[in-house]
Amino acid sequence: MHCVNDKIRRKVTLGLFVTLLADVCLSAVPSSYHGHGKRSPFVPLASIKKQTHAQPKKIQNYSLAAMRMVGSLQEDKKIWGIVMTPDKKIYHVELGDYIGRESAQVTEVNSQDITVSETIADGSGGWLKRQLEIKRITQNMRADK
Image (cartoon, rainbow, N blue to C red):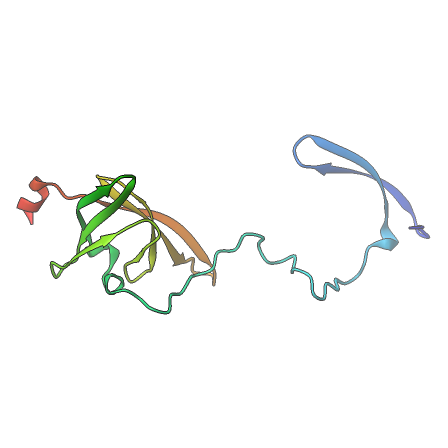
C-alpha cells in the first residue's frame, strides 16, 4: 500500500496492554463498506434467538410463576422434578425439557429446586436469557395456601 497523501504516525491501542505504532495512510481509508456475503459488522457476534418447538407439551400451557415444585424422584444418577400446576395436575420434568408458556428449558434439577433458562424479548428486537428457579414447597408453605 503506497500513500500519495500525507503519511502520519499514529499510536493504536489494542486491548488493555498492547500499544502499536503504525503508519496510517489517510487516502487509503475506504469510503464505503462492501461486505457482500460477509457478516455485518453492525450485528452482535453472540446474538440469542428464541427457540420454537413444533409440538408443545401440556406443561407449556401454564405460566412458570404458577408452577410449584412438590418433590423429586431419583434413580441412579438421573433425577426428575415433580411439578404441580394451578389446576392440581402433576408433571415430571427432567434436564432439557421445556416448560411454561415461555418455553423455558430445564437446566438443573435437584431435590430442592428446578432451574430453568428462559429466553425473553429485550424490548429492542433481540432476546435475553435469564435463569429462574422453581423452589420446592414445604409442608409449611402448603398449609398457607
